Image (cartoon, rainbow, N blue to C red):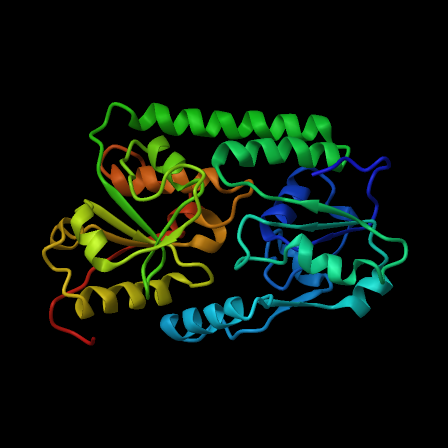
Length: 319
């Protein structure tokens, strides 16, 4: 992420996490357009949307996965970019990302239309792969936006929250956790997940720190013998995630898995927390601490308590 020679005045953010960060750093009044997935802060709903998905995200999980993989096989982007609207907005900075090609528009997507934009905007690549990276990217975004002190304060705040979570949990018994970025087929969460679980004093050995999420199998999950399973699928609300996880438990007969037999199945809001590497990512660790140590960690504020739910899956019921 390079530092423009002059302070950006007309920003287009195509990354929900970056949109939140621009807001936190006090530069949201310069944002002139966002992606179709940006949903925070609330005023973002009034802004032009310059991206769209080529796929209906409400499709059943396996169908959606197949559609995404078909586009990837043809080396096509999952998103369209409204070049005409961008030309009219005349941005001087466009924020894209390379953390995950499935999650948002990439700099390569922007390059296809950049030559048609006058003046030609700078492109910032927001690309954290770990929680440490999120803090580093916060500092770099502060440089890009000429908001150095605001970035410094945000980093201090983040470290303070992480330290508080660690302080509440590090003397408590550790539990083995499995976190799923997708349910059908299963995908083990990567990138910053291990760090978040460790903050909450849990054990996560499915994907190493900084490594991307990976496709897996229910057999591998069974061999891992997790004490707790948390589904945080991208683009799914809690109800949909719960339906998909319950269906998987029944279809694959996971009843003997410790997390299932002991009633430790959960779903969590990946859009707001676990899958969005912005200012609210650290709150995922607070939610994890509450899930892993419910008797020792006090109830969270309502906005965080609403971000997860425990799931009960009786053996009898719809499949």
